Image 1 (cartoon, rainbow, N blue to C red):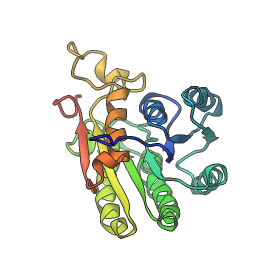
Image 2: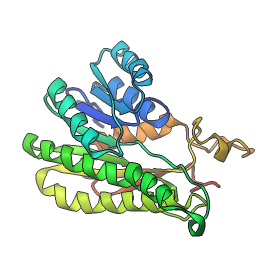
Image 3: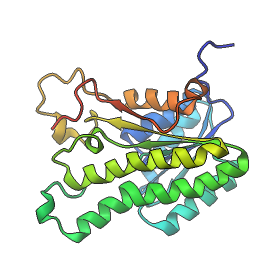
Length: 246
């Protein structure tokens, strides 16, 4: 018996934003630990490429094109995963967006709606839908990808607000769902060395302490496994000790 149990053997995971970056890294890390993995994002060809990598690790995969900001697509996503695997043991709310970087005082309503729908409303609706399934199963595990920008204000103004909402959503859901043996935790990355965030890190001289997607994936494996069985309602910052780097 392992001293620290990080195995996910026999588990089924659903990861949004799973076609690249952090989502792809988490999907592959889960598969390495024995989980079957469903992944969703807006572009099916990108998802299919990741699904092949998961299957190459000996696990089953299901790529589903889905827009997390649209409630009708959330319902369809959960139904497709349930039809394929019969259950969902782990949900990772990773999909996110940041279409507007300007000051709040100049922000238009569309910027708020788009960012909130994908970063907060979508994860809320998906978590509720999956939690109902987990309750029937007797338990489960939800991991929200927040941001250090949700802990300390940054120049990503609306984004910061939505990610702060994700952190509070994590705490509220953890308290409510604990009675059903469902744990809810969050990861708050700083700037991660991905193509999407390149504008935020490319001019930093020392990038050795900037996380890469695999660093986030390692934390996700910990939170998804029995190694963290008594961790609930927490937000773990993964930022190399630097917090949010602007």
